[in-house]
Amino acid sequence: MPGPRNIAIEVLKILNSKGYEAYLAGGCVRDQLLGRETNDYDIATNAPVETVCTIFKQKDWKVVATGIDHGTVTVVHKLGDTFEVTTYRKDLRTDGRRAEVSHDQVTIEEDASRRDFTINAMYQDKQGKVLDFFKGSEDIKSKLLRFVGDPIERIKEDYLRILRLFRFSSQLSFFITKEALEASKNNMKGLEVISTERITKEWSLLLNGHSYASALDSMEETGALKQLFPQIKWADIKLASLSRLQVRQNRDLAVMAAILLKTKESSADGFISALCLSKNHQEVLRLAVSLPDIESKTIQRPSDAMQILDRCEQVGGAEAYEQLFMPLWLFCAEHPQLATKIKYILEVEQKWGHLRRGKMPVDGSDLMEKAGIPEGPYVGECLQELRDLYRNQVWKHQKDGIKLAIDIAKEKKII
Ligand code: ATP
Ligand code: MG
Image (cartoon, rainbow, N blue to C red; front, side, top):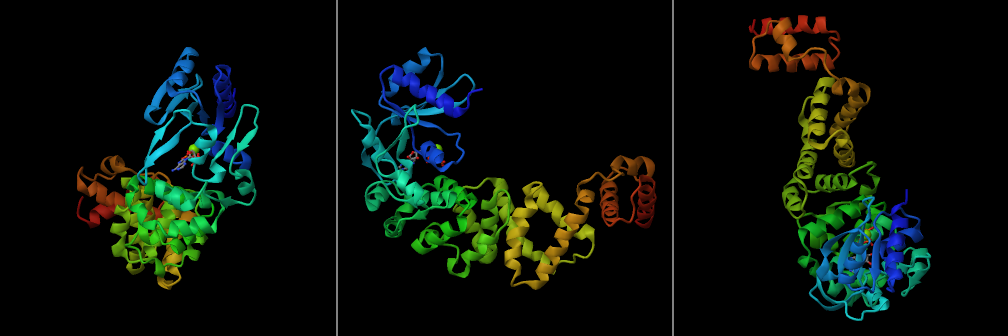
């Protein structure tokens, strides 16, 4: 079965056969040179957007008008792979985020010069030959993020580029040129025009990127963190300590939780509302900042620990304890009592996690039918007590569970 790259090359061939230029462009060329996996093949062409539509419709491809005004259509291969085909464009006017563009007689060099970084401004033809107008491949070798053209001008055209700069430095583990850092620092206010949705998207990609800790350092140095999240006292947070977060997925949530734990709890609301997070992710963060409260709770038996683990799983899913407890570890250095409790909770999960997640051999209908407990709130109450005893390994088999349930019910004068 042809992979997406081969199908993308088929798109180039179709456009070439009609006499038009067509190239793979931007991120997919960069990723190929880096040996990074990519599934997102963007195509640039000098064919007008209406012509692209006609050509692919004639070939029985599905064509979706995803951004006709910007010269973009999505062509869909019969196997389902989609490709954005964009006509070369140049900017006429910009307002700090969006550009008014022209497609009239635009050359590939002009198209390249409106792209953000040299490593994102390369093209590749159907034979694999790379067109590199701004020495992007040299910058790939030196692991350098450099703006195409003058960094100040390029940032003023679109302030989102400041965030893309930090995000790529995290994802690719690339350095940022001194000029780009300086220009970002002096134009930080411009981030005010960027929507919360875009900020959230770039921020999450950055935190999930491999070198998030050094990207955060650059953001701190240039004042980006303060600009985006003024409610956080960044000076109180040792950013280097955040690099020790060992989580396998949703690292963005874990880092945000760590930031909130290290700062005043009262700033959590402001921070959360500065972002556009799903309801569930907001809940995970709120739970994360409330977890230090367990320092004052009695956690002595497995069932005590399991109740907390249940809550974490209920809010954040099966792997949630990673995102919730790893950040808490970083916080524990100054809270030894809390550290002892967390250690106990994680030990319980490791040893008896199967017991917590497994099905107890007695359920509500057993309590009614076999222990004679009347239908109603007592069933839930007895079940909860029985569950705690089961988790503390007081009983194991159904007959012992039923016997215990009868004792509990008698003691409570339910039966
Ligand atoms: P990703 O791996 O995140 O998809 P990408 O480089 O493909 O990275 P996209 O946002 O998909 O990024 O954009 C595709 C290309 O369009 C970029 O490689 C770049 O050439 C150009 N581009 C995207 N956003 C901007 C921008 N804000 N300013 C200038 N060029 C941009
Ligand atoms: Mg892309």
